[in-house]
Length: 139
Ligand SMILES: [Cu+2]
Image 1: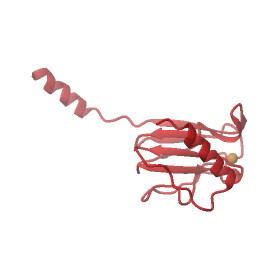
Image 2: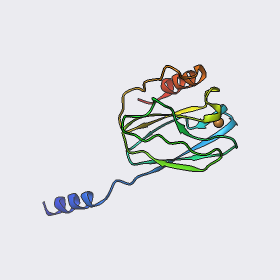
Image 3: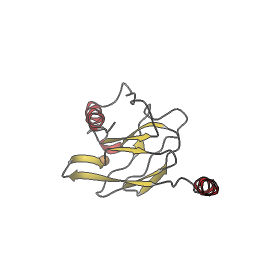
Image 4: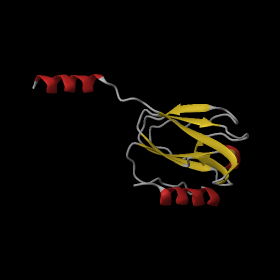
């Protein structure tokens, strides 16, 4: 009984550790051209995502209509090593501003969230990549 109480107190005193997940931006890698690696992240609310410009001329920006209600949009500079903390649960569609039409997108799922809703003006190649991301997404 005493030990159980101590264990409970210790568990309550240990904060959930927020993680930082790294995403690399490439012109070309063994996985293809104009991509984020990984193209899908499932993270906990309060975790951060760091976008690393492994190769030049990329950025990371939220796609209009593809972030949860109440979440703040963001947009990094080109070639910027950029970290954002995501607290609102839901699906975040991320695009590279110069290469959106070429399908340079990724998806971040924060917490548990229903499947993303795609805006009607999504470029066809971005939609194709999202479909591939969702097909490969672990349940
Ligand atoms: Cu790009």
